[in-house]
Image (cartoon, rainbow, N blue to C red; front, side):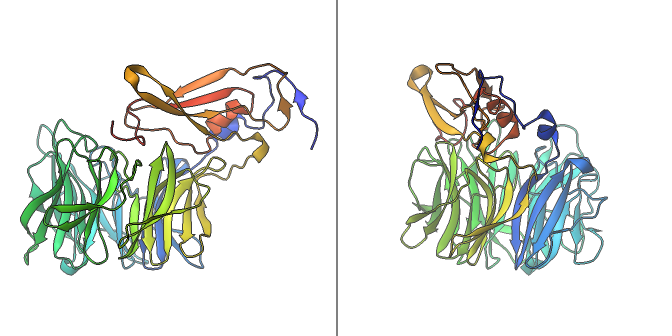
Length: 450
């Protein structure tokens, strides 16, 4: 290793250029598992931002599913998410150009299955195999005034849309129990957003497919519910912030709930988009879950019998879109040294492999500054948080007693949060000898409801 050159902070020469920052990287979201296959969505700037459903089969290369003239993207709630569903190799997706639902079977062209037409939109679909239909969020813009939201069904072979649940301003997260007998969903009304307060409802699915015996089981105007999910043995689980933290619960009996892991950590996230997932079942007795502590995401498993949490030691600091199957988990993750990637984890050995990366840009470790979580007092006796990035460059050192300039960043949106993941836009500055503070101010998520 060559001796470091002494130069003032801010004057260091860096290999991280503006050209590297704008070099193409793809977006990675919406992980799913279907049998032995793993799916995700890639947002590709080189294709005009088109969202492509990708399937990875063990022993073969990843393959695009939707053809080039199709863009798997929905505008329900405007922000979208929940663009596709998959079951037994068949993929169902919302196409951006017409906002309608399509079915694509192996080797065939996509087939239009929704027939409403006009300005109607679909999202967050699940496959109701027993009744050969999709159950999804339906949004109707055909009349003047505010769009009408509902939970609806569409036959998988094509046909008219049937409204199942309506009357509230917003709906999300329809989930069908493993035996096909019950439906769970979230709903909320103005002026709330789902992280302010929403309701979790359950209903029985009648022989004719309608929803009967509807009942509120959790939530309210001051309680946020996130990601209802049925366990393989038919127990409804969900995340609630009733304790002040988004913790994981299950429904033990009619309106009787039990907390699975009471801790000052967040197992949920703001539901700006559909299809978010922080936990999944690899069996009826084990949950794979992601949770955030002081702005850093972790992964663990919860034994549903003992309710014990076991942390999994991984290098990642952001984990999302968690899915699981017997013995394995798949998720999107990033670390202080590497950008986002799709990761497959062996739950027995703790080993993992990378299926896809958001970018192929690599930087030598000696030029990388890793985030240091900090907190500091703010007004009204409260605490704010952030990530501090000290200057880092293997070729340079500053003169004794010299101090760096500090660049302070503030993320957009009060319900958002910055994350401690490798970002070239930060490393550009730190590798030149300028420190960066990326602030999670009051209102940022990941630190409890208060």
